[in-house]
Image (cartoon, rainbow, N blue to C red):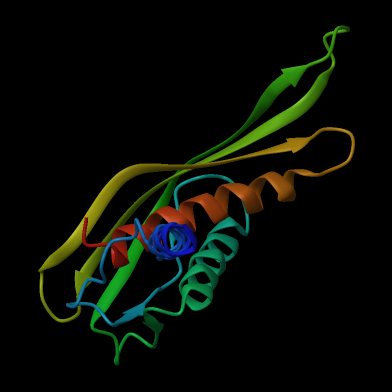
Length: 164
């Protein structure tokens, strides 16, 4: 009886050990690109200063991820370039009195990653959309911009490092 219980205990421990094994849904790295340069995005909107903030947000996304190095254009294997195609801020939610409680900031960009010194394109995307919602009474438009830029930076990073 004791050996039977011991067998069940060992079986339970083994099942628990296997079920706790690590698993990841993340794709592999793109072996072709290990260093990237990110020049300031062009601005096709009327939003002053947005290209600098967007470009800084994208660079910070790469730096925080730490899989691909950001370097000068002369040293980079690929150049990530793009332009801000559209910027919009609009009311998002309302209270019972029809007052705006939240706004949404939407930023659309066209971007591409090309090998330096050639026309070989690693990826390109038109009208990538980043959005950020912020509370009308406690936050400002820059909070929505930051969230939209963080979303765009994440999407651009994923396109650059994921093999899927």
